[in-house]
Length: 162
Image 1 (spheres, rainbow, N blue to C red):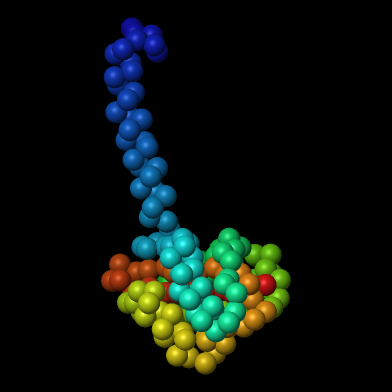
Image 2: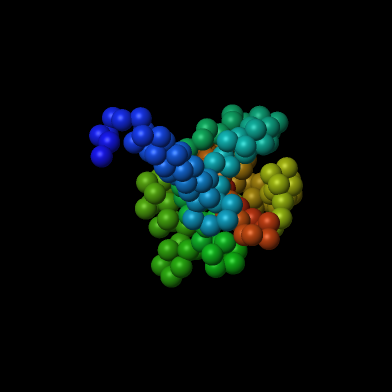
């Protein structure tokens, strides 16, 4: 029987290590449901920066806690297939923010549809309430996320705070 340092053992372990690495990478990319994206903040920062600076406001900084809260909301909406700011009985926006360590004031924009970010931000800017949230001078941080369905529909959530 070969010892663990023999070339024969090494040749058998190398393919297994490659398979395990590929499976781990695939698991990281898929998340809990189709198209979960807690990394949408990276792509959304340029839109938010343009929106705010064109209105004389400083850009918003990325915040991992706000992104986590946004992803929770997006995932809940995708699972329930409902657009709403709560995530179940007694789990309103304020409680979700508190649970994520987000101090008031904070606000949330949500959306649903088969759209990319340019259309998403355009839609929010054309809605007075959503626009007000993005242009609120009290806010200096944000988190953006979506959860998607296999048919390409995305449930978006943007959380802004100070």
